[in-house]
Length: 168
Image (spheres, rainbow, N blue to C red):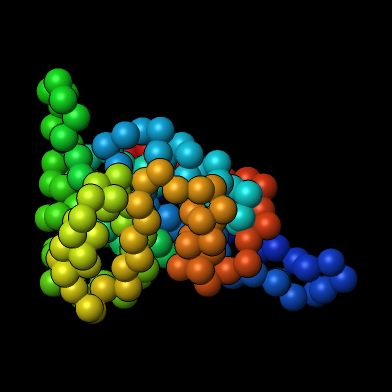
């Protein structure tokens, strides 16, 4: 698995201004455009980033058990597209309780168009429970709102240009 470990120096500084390693972000969404969209936006925020994009949540779950990311971005629903015959494994409704039982400490950004429907986001919050560091965004959302949430969850100020990507 490739890692990006380039340290960034602030102008006129002898010490790195950012983290000693690139943030590692795991995207889980059955729609491939969302991972590509997120990669483009995040590449503008962080000079170096490693993005692992998964369409299948079962495969993503294996990766999450192997190594904790700095941020997990996941859709809540999958396999709900009319006429779709592919299976993408568990849904976010199944993934969040598994993460809660594992007592993960990394931040989680949960996105879904269904949060616009009454009661769905509150049910998702209950599913995550109080112990998860989870934030929720309703699709569609603005580029600025997405950037703000990712920056807040990663605890960084951003400003980068490049991204490394490994598809799972």
